[in-house]
Length: 78
Image (cartoon, rainbow, N blue to C red; front, side, top):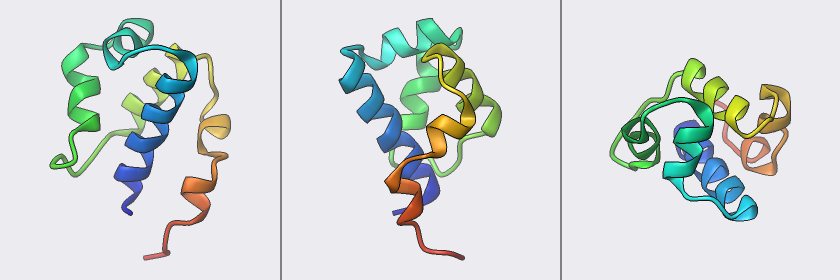
């Protein structure tokens, strides 16, 4: 799994846990829905830390809280 895939997976998991859809995440974060759907698209290779921060803000999470997840602990070092 790539870092980008782990980020997308974690946002999907958080949305499921909170009972919101990606469109609602975009609204909470103040970004366009295309930004969120692009981040979730497996063919897209990158996501900026600025976008991650905005999405975390929308979910009332710090970056530290977001990245404290086993998905990120299991990534291979490159």
